Image (cartoon, rainbow, N blue to C red):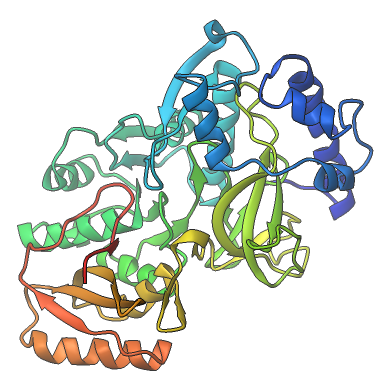
Length: 429
């Protein structure tokens, strides 16, 4: 969280740090040096306008192609390979995973960002943090774990444990802060009920949910609060290739602030690439200012956001505020019989029903037009799944002005997710 007196002071700091980054990349980064030279930015900037106007966007497809052409890590490396100490890769939800390397300095920058997330979430040195995460090659909560250590907290890794084992560890170690995806936080609560584990005895007071949209959706937040005995739910988002980006506003639920001292954000029209007015929905573009070893300039994240038009925020900062957090992925939107369906909007409707244990959205072509159907798995306690099915269909019709068939499936039919949930699938009709 920054404490700049006004927006101009924040922008001046961004410009100064961007100049430092550009100088280094111009000298030694094979991927970005030609782009910077071609844009005429190598001599530095006095404002951000030329940066926005002249430097082209960076896309995930370009990074993936660069890594295919120059295996295994591509050319977006500012220093010799011996300078790099960390390896991670993306989850691969949009195709081939991207490999990402970090120097010790870049890693420390990311850990520092997560420390700010913890502070904004109300985490103190007295807290005990549990990370319900597998600690594989996906970046996930690796930086969060080290940030908790740096912040002075007792940090407990949850890799290699079953869901029930994690629940027992949370209770036995008197954990006060849980870090995981919103989907898995729900799953933990459901397994607790199945196993007779009493979460009312838990000391968890904060759940930091990241890795996928959800914690800023009111119905999801309410579900988590109920399952976790009134714990405060905090949202966060970041990306393996860009780093930890946001913290939840201390004064407003469901609003994410971008750490603007560390990132330069833009919101663009996904089709035209032009900046759009604050208050309108668009695609988030980010430039990270401290990941010198493997940076990204004007990176099209594919995340759909709605930036607030007012500043400063109620919390007093000038960091860009995203109402509703990450609203979804630009490429995840499905057009069903002429109606735009975003996964976050569908989830918000379904999570109005606490009786829904899990769901799956299937998209299929019928007479050259996309259709959708939803499979729903009810909680074991539901007496009449048929009544629940009818109520869900009615809510979906009222919300989207669209009839979406709902089918109930047997308990245990649908997959559960520890990392990013994959609930939207394209199938044969």
